[in-house]
Image (tube, rainbow, N blue to C red; front, side):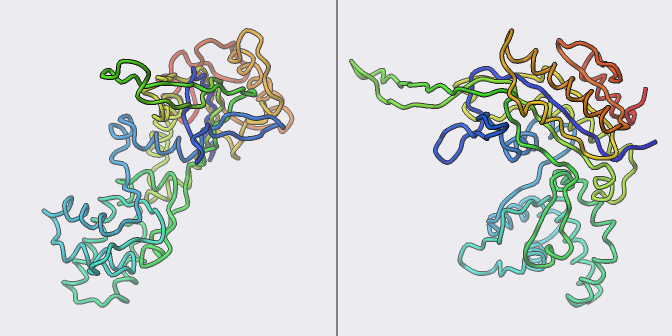
Length: 362
């Protein structure tokens, strides 16, 4: 039987680093279980995934997220100049945003909205046909509403909108372009409390005889992070124009790869915390199920934090699985972790991805 949710549970240990900062240039943190944890925001993780070379190779071109509509128009004109003239592109943007793009001042939108070139090209095509048929704006709007599925299929070229969703506040896009995100991503938190350190650093001026040319400080720490995300398979299928479940599962396998391998780029030239996941567990279920409460009581270091974090995750999974009688199909890939009854063991990440593609079977 098909399960609608795919849950991704990742444990990843990062060596000293500062992967996500707040407005005070300090590490982002959160209080969980009454104790401070270091945090990497979901926005940071999703952007890192969207901008990664793996995403570009396997899932296509990432969207452009901006509220600078004047600059966006220039980008579209450049990208689509062989298919549409600038006037048509400007007219389409005006219809979608309700903004006067011919104004001399810089034109901005109401929010930083995601735009996909090929989805926008689909709208241009419809506007072009409407001009040829001499349809007015009202008739064009009605026609576009009747082509909702085709519009969603065009969205497949801007997959991160289908995954993360889109909310527009003005123009035709606010009426036709709203998308409920299929992928929910949690803020990653350390499984244990963290005492941050301060790196006092200098930049030596080679042409200065004594002293340094620059002094500064930077907070940093190390820790084991729990990452969690859930994918609503039916929502993703609908967002992409009712594509087959196999297509959605292929995307889910790539999401697993990204969750297990991507690391935010902040301060990486100074810390190089390019760590891969130590454990990746995936479950197919009827409801989204986070295992974050496995770490509500912070893990205490025995032989490091990683081993007790794995044990806490597996113990909590067994408890909640039994207590709620969850009917899940689960599998895991781990660098060094014991097998778990009821959970299929994959020897490699690729094997776990293949299991996801196979609907959690086999």
